[in-house]
Length: 481
Image 1 (cartoon, rainbow, N blue to C red):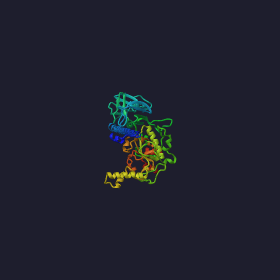
Image 2: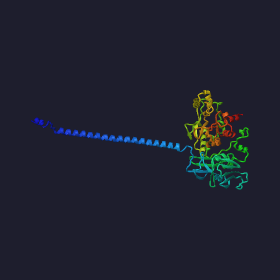
Image 3: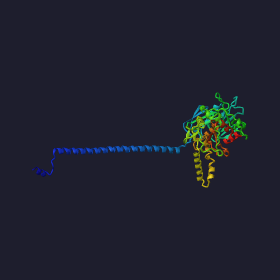
Image 4: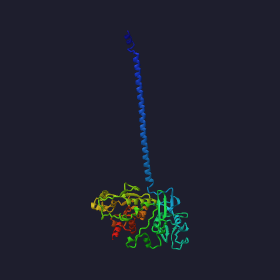
């Protein structure tokens, strides 16, 4: 009967209580599992969004950085130049180490330096002044001091209304850079001091906008307790030309200089270089220890390596630079004094080179010459290269006593037109260095003029080479004669 009733009710089945509870729990478990899957999908979706957003943020930051760098490069390339003079802010002027003026840079800079007020220079030197803005006269007083008009034989300069003309000791000269007349003040480019005055030093630091003018000490007469300054004169002066030759120690009369008679003067520095003195000015047996001659006629063996090489750890360098100890310490002293004079851009490009390195350099130049001129034979190419690069075994760099330095790292003859080179011309000997390949000595040295190549020989010999005007080959030959 029960079976029949079940069939009559559509075939539905009645579950027991236990079966119904089991089915309910299973459905609940399935629903919970489905909910967990949905939640996990939501969590993964949020995590994916975070990751994607983070990556987008990183890419955006990188893009902005690259865009900023590119914009800066474009701005520098089109709106300024690396050597552009400072045209805003103030220039600070020092005379004899004392600050005397701060002046707006605008209108007071040139492509090569800056203007200075000649009235300030006049006051610093105790010149006499007369005239007015239309024709201002400055007189270098003689001792004892006379009237402002002088006696007619004093040295003087007259600035005229024409900004490009001045009269120096009665001689009219034309200036490449015109003067600036501002009220009762005359402003002159610093090149004027370099070109037309002696007994003064001038330097201009572009980065710091600092201009310094100072008198030059007479090293022969000065002592530690008393400094005697060189007389300040105009180069267009009423003096016997031989007087100037006597002051410089260079004999212009055509006769040979007696190097044995040259006495080494006392040397004074603006910086404290006392700890370097034993290196710059070696004594005893070491005085002549650095006179080795290396050139095409005096070769150095391939396995020759100095035993006292040390690494140069200062200055701007393109890589590791090594020199012998005395040369390195003297170079460090030179750089210290250079910076004290306001020159901060000098770079040491090369020092010691071994035989193999010099061989590679020479060979690379030979290949370059032959590629540029296919008709050249190897011998001809080597002859061309030997005029500007030493053959292996003939390079001074292998001694550890030679170095290349300039203010750009380019190592070109343009360095000879810089203030840094002019400073080295006057001062390198004090640190024991000579210009190894001077202009006009190419037939003797066999190497073209290299204003960047310096060689350590010690102060004693550097001074005599500097004063005699000889190159190293001439000097050593003279010592043997």
